[in-house]
Length: 66
Image 1 (cartoon, helix red, strand yellow):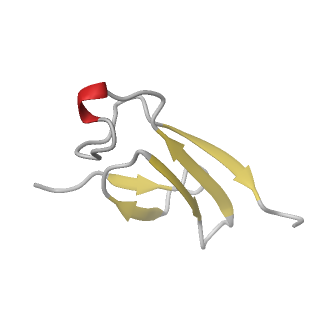
Image 2: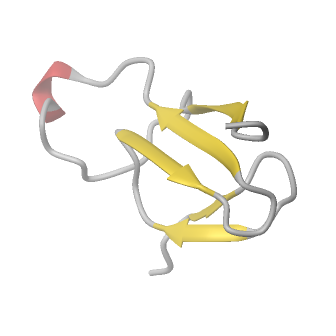
């Protein structure tokens, strides 16, 4: 079984593989901070990261100028 890929929302570079509940990661290529967070999860699986929720959405925050 292969893990889902986590890619930069700005340039598309592969940043990681796995299941996400909360993740902030800065892309080494374009320096954008990618933040992935599940908007909800099943109470039966609360605290158990056994799969990536289908409603996890990336947000992008540029670090340019910092």
